[in-house]
Figure 1 (spheres, rainbow, N blue to C red):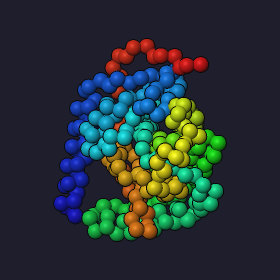
Figure 2: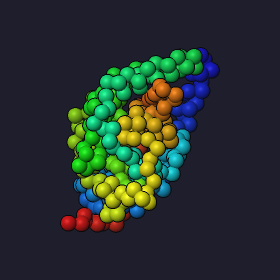
Figure 3: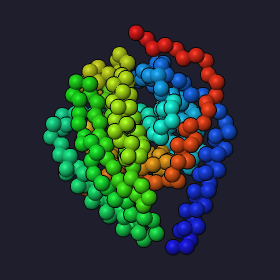
Figure 4: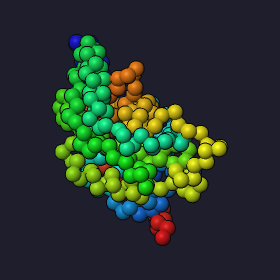
Length: 288
């Protein structure tokens, strides 16, 4: 137990040092309003009051915090004003994700499966001297917009010191899906929801990359459906395992779902996100 505590303190110190070093280097934030190009797949209309960090710097920042970027990270979104949340944008080239199971999924069954896997994982955590993670429940049950081909859901958890929420969004495209995962404090959920809706509405695949552009004769179909994505089958990168709040990458292990929720030192990332950005050219006005 003492050894585990010493290692944990060492890890916290290392992460703090890495974040302090990163804070010394100004970052090239793009300030809204502007249109942000996300690879060759989509465009995000970034409103005023938001700022965006490009893929290379996002991956470098995540790595400096002790994470392991997968290369699918396209950017990081943060508020321009004094708020404690962030969004990581990723694109996964998984193929065309069929949505025909969206009408049949059972949110209660999904949550029960996630909870069962978490309880099993807590036994291993206890053996290593790590505090258990307690799921609170859906803060917003999964719901799918069949016209826009976008899905939203939120789940909360109680850690040893505070409760957090992970707000998940997926936008389906022709060759894969775009994910925007927002992390914040559960107490701030009412303020987080409008941000999620704004960003998801402003995210659109480009012509030829849209869900409706799918060609069954030539395009790859994803190995899993939409319900499996919500359950977490495709969230295996673990890139956010040590960030400031609760994050929920889910993986399937046999028939059970394991959920990993990690709390980091409170406020470290929040302070880092509030540092002054490097000077950047005037933002390009969004296209009409």
